Length: 92
Image 1 (cartoon, helix red, strand yellow):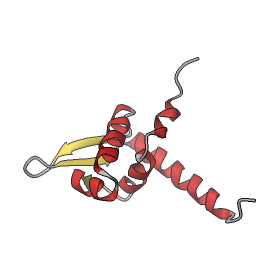
Image 2 (cartoon, rainbow, N blue to C red; image 1 turned 90 degrees about the horizontal axis):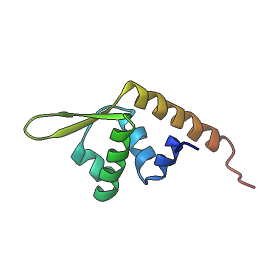
Image 3 (tube, rainbow, N blue to C red; image 1 turned 90 degrees about the vertical axis):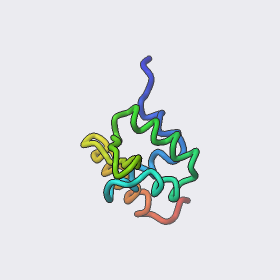
């Protein structure tokens, strides 16, 4: 059986970064402030590999990350899933 790409989301921080980038592009330093630095860079690596996130150079040597069209679709679906999970506060 082929590897399930969804299993890559087991990397801690991947979903959080997608949702953070949904509101707009972010500098690497902004991402590492929101999520522990090592975790953020591991998650970014996974998201780049899946072509959900892309990077461009900003002023100086600044890296700026943003969602690809595919990444935006995935992030929007994650937002929908989060809303469904929040519909019922009781987990019993």
